[in-house]
Length: 166
Image 1 (spheres, rainbow, N blue to C red):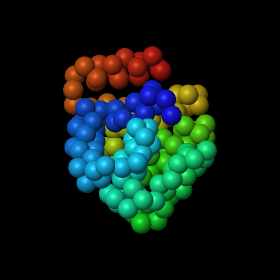
Image 2 (spheres, helix red, strand yellow; image 1 turned 90 degrees about the horizontal axis):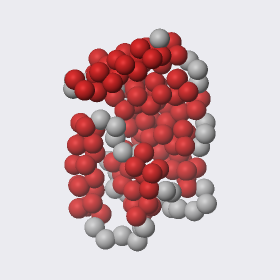
Image 3 (cartoon, rainbow, N blue to C red; image 1 turned 90 degrees about the vertical axis):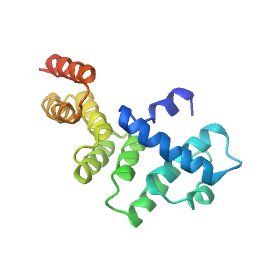
């Protein structure tokens, strides 16, 4: 996995990044030393962050089918917690990486059903709708993002983007 792909997995909003950073700090302290390389560890941390289950340190295995394995691990997490907005969100991200936008849309929608103000899921969903040529749906979701964005500068960028889509 390239560094750009790892960076793309980061939270998109300042608040999301603060929450994620705090969670990752707790995970790093709890895990301690490990045998994962940098890219593998990023994935393991995300799975633990999404599930709050440190057992995944021992369950996640890497190989040629890492995305498929990650999807299965996240689905396993959904069996434990079917209302987890983060698990649905990360399944959306995984399906998006696999080039399966219909599945990604489904999981982003589920994340938003659970947490209607989940800004990162809203942004991903709006972007996928836009890529799929579903401009009306994209505008609708971007308007929801606008309603959850308190900072003036991002609000102006979102407004400008909405105007471009109209």
